[in-house]
Image 1 (tube, rainbow, N blue to C red):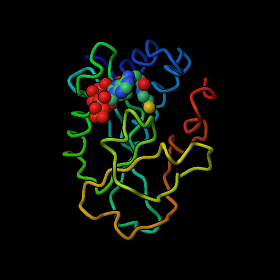
Image 2 (cartoon, helix red, strand yellow):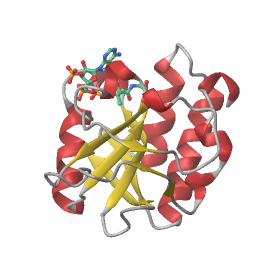
Image 3 (cartoon, protein in one colour):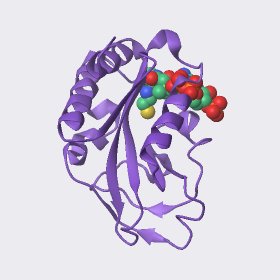
Image 4 (tube, rainbow, N blue to C red):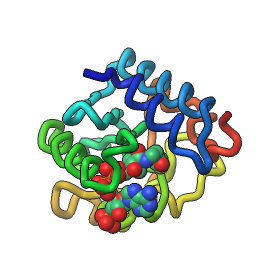
Length: 168
Ligand SMILES: CC(C)(COP(=O)(O)OP(=O)(O)OC[C@H]1O[C@@H](n2cnc3c(N)ncnc32)[C@H](O)[C@@H]1OP(=O)(O)O)[C@@H](O)C(=O)NCCC(=O)NCCS
């Protein structure tokens, strides 16, 4: 059974495009750092891995919220619904009110489709149009409006939020 580090490393080493071996090492170590810090970690069917780290919406601190990252599906298993099923399983286990994810529109916009005005938990140039939310509790984000957000731990390192071209 592959470890979270191995799944992240193998996926991003081969991903191509924006990603190179430097990213693979960065995201694999990021996963291990989050796990050591207490983030929820899920290996799905031995081929996909993600961490879920708590985040607080500052104007609605009663809501149970998480951010997903890093997320990787081994190359030969991509585009077969593994990421989607991993997310469904994590959501069943964590029972969150809201899950956030920072990423590509073509990967995440369809599933993470709840309109929101919650800011990022760090000062970063990362674009808000790539910051998606999915409400699991009906109406959880109704009336939240504009809000800052907060989190602690390895995910607050600014370089993690930078564009891949500036990371490695
Ligand atoms: C991105 C990734 C996590 C998606 O996992 P997956 O198991 O392939 O995703 P699923 O099969 O559950 O599909 C989820 C959605 O992503 C889309 N998608 C997945 N890979 C895609 C690709 N290479 N290009 C375009 N869309 C893609 C699917 O079409 C689907 O969208 P839909 O629900 O609107 O149809 C996985 O492909 C991966 O690890 N890629 C390499 C690393 C990477 O690029 N990570 C993204 C960092 S933001």
